[in-house]
Length: 64
Image (cartoon, rainbow, N blue to C red):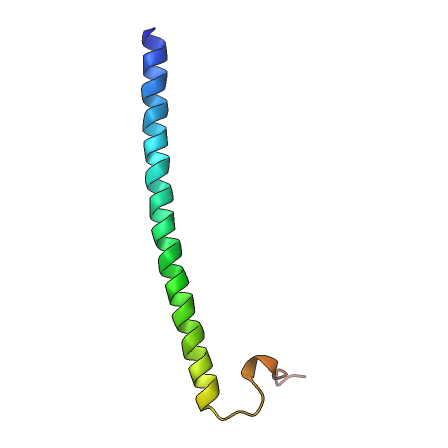
């Protein structure tokens, strides 16, 4: 019986640790999504204010 209680305690600890990891990862993903969105907005603003007739994403690289 004691062996089962020890295993349950160990598994409970692992579940709590994994839950903490998942929570931190979720926060990091949210932060990274916000950063990517801001970078995309900056790139779109820079592209629009640059006056280029062809969007930067559609231009051929200079080595072509």
